[in-house]
Image 1 (cartoon, one colour):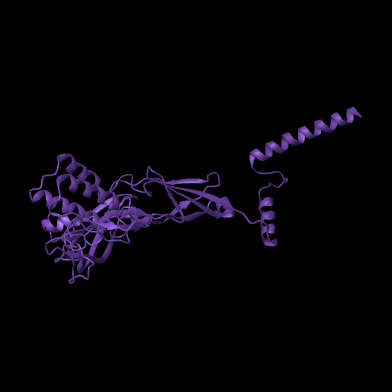
Image 2 (cartoon, helix red, strand yellow; image 1 turned 45 degrees about the vertical axis):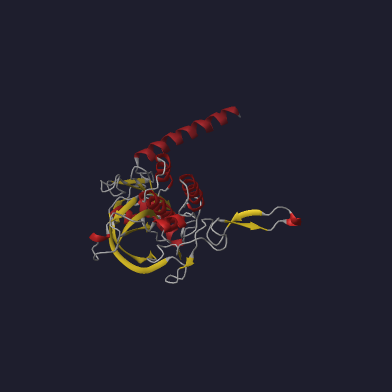
Length: 359
C-alpha cells in the first residue's frame, strides 16, 4: 500500500493534517472494529485501516505517540470463527495467518488427535492494494477536491454540506479498479494442513500451527485455532479433570455382584459390582488435569434398575431364593435376620400378654 492509497483508505486527501488523520482513523476503527461490526470482512478492513496508518507514519507524516499507542490497543485481532477465514501480515509478507475454530469431542480433547484442515485464502488485489479503487491523482470532480457537497434543503433554507460519496470525503479522485471488479480481492489460494492436537486441551484454548511444519507438506498459511470441546452424551467434566458418568445397571446383576463394562474416555473398562456400593472410581481414566499432563479419575455412579412387574418365572425364582436363605427349621440362616426374628417374637409375645391382662 503506497502513501496515496493509505490516505484514500482513511478517506483523506494526501494534504490532510495530523489531526485529520487521527480523527479519521478513530472514526473508522469505531465503525469497523470486529467487536462492534459483525460483517465477515470487518477483520480484513480493520487490517487495511491499520496498514494505512502505518504507511502514513513511515512516509514521514508524524502521528503523536499517544495515537500510536491507542492504535495498538484498539486493534486486537477478532475472535476466530470457523466460518470465516481472516488473514494478517506476518514477518514474511508472503505468509498469512488464518483464524479458525476447531470443534473436538471430549475423547479427542482428552487423548489428542490429528486433524486435516483445509480451506482457501483470498489475497488483496495487488493493483489497488485491496481498496477496490485506484488514485490516478488530482481532485475529485464531484466536489472539486473539497471532500464535501451541498445537499438540497427544504423550503429554500441554506443547503447543508455532507461528505462527498464519490471520494469518501477525501477530496482525491478515485477510479474503479477493473482488475478486481471493485471488490479489492485478488488471487485465491487453497491450503491443507495436518494438525496434531495435544491431549488435554479445553474450550477456549488457542493453538498456533506453523504451516511450514505441516505433516501434509508446506502450507502458504499459518493457523490460529480456537478450541471448542463439544458436550458429551454420557460424561460431565469437572475442573480438576474428574469425569463423571451415571450408568443404569440391571438390579439383579448388582445384587449378584456381577462384573460389567463401563464407558471411559479411552474405551470400555471392567468394573466388579458390589451390592453395598453405588459409586466406583477408576484412577487416571479421566481428563488430563493440565495440558499434556496426567489424567484425573473417572467416577461412575451406577443406578440399579428393577422391573416394575415381575414375571411368573421371576416370582418362582425369587421364592426359591427365599427358601434357600432358610435353614431346615425354617429360620433364616443369616445371623442378623435370625436375631431380629427372635427379638420380634419375644416382643410380640409380651405384647399379647399385656393385652390379655388388660382385658
